[in-house]
Amino acid sequence: MKIHPLLTDSQDIADICQRFSTADFVAVDTEFMRENTYWPILCLIQISDGKEAAAIDPLAENVDLEPLLDLLVNNEEVLKIFHAGGQDVEIIHNMTGKTPHPIFDTQVAAMALGPSEQIGYANLVDSWLGITLDKGARFTDWSRRPLNNRQIEYAIGDVTHLSEIFPMMLEKLKESGRGIWINGEMEKLADPDNYVNDPDAAWRRVKFQGRNLESLGRLKALAGWREKEAQSKDLPRGRIMRDETLADIAGHPPKDQSRLGQVRGLSNGWKNNDIGERLMDVLSNAEPLPQEELPDRKGRRPKFGKENALVADLLKLLLKIRSAEMNVASKLLARADDLEKIVGGEREGVALLEGWRYEEFGKDALDLIEGRMSFTVKDGRLKMTHQQEEESSEA
Image (cartoon, rainbow, N blue to C red):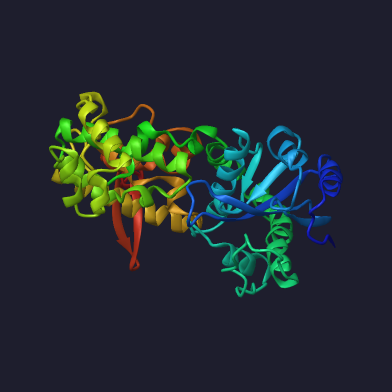
């Protein structure tokens, strides 16, 4: 494979992207920094089509990334390969308002080919290529220039290895017939809605005790305000206000701005500065949370009592057995909330009861719930037995 030196020239970037525009796939990775900012700072983009590979420097002076971004988000003929690509896709979405498509994530694909649910990149490379990665450059400050040869080689290695692993994975998926299992997961990864930082939804990420609608309304208003402040200042949201402080103010709002200096987690300056004034304005205008936005109590669904909890545990055991038999990650077959839904009587819109998941596991899950399946122990091993099997053996 031809490895290019670090690309800093716009014409060189345009040329390689032109060549990649007719490739079957490109493996993509990014290096970024986000410790001190709200928006991640893109420091390096690595890309390979399996024949040549390069690292592109987005911090180079007057560099034009348009050909690269056009390849990633507008060229539907080229498959884009990532590993655990959520943050990489987020960065591209922040820059373009679009996501790469079509997309293939090797971490997701590994779930259909083995029991690991979140295999790390180093373990993926080791298991598929037998290569132990040099971890020495993992903690590089990628925003510093110049980058040395070791750092660049380490970064490019991410996509050269991916470009080798992807065809191997694809062949295994074809042989096993499991490619269809992950199509939906790939589409979810490419859904732009996943990468929109909506201030109105920010409150759902904050841990809060209690279900008082007025307090939750203040929580929603404060979290949305903090998100906008962080975005406008390009600071981590925790630098504006920590979650614990935000939740405390939502539950016990100060009567006036002068009391803000007494709130744990805020400096004394909040009692008379501009940001403190804006916070108090948000509190004064906060409305109670509408009843329909009140989240379900965690782990409790309608008609979900102790007996149903025991049935859910049996389903989890069934899931563990089935995923081990199939050598597949259990989370790909079914998630805990889906199991709880069907135990609680829900049937419509449950992923477990649709498509391949129903055929591979959902059908048996319903049989267990509805009394058509039982667990038995034979020769010291746990075995699932369908009712019709028992009846035929008795006959």
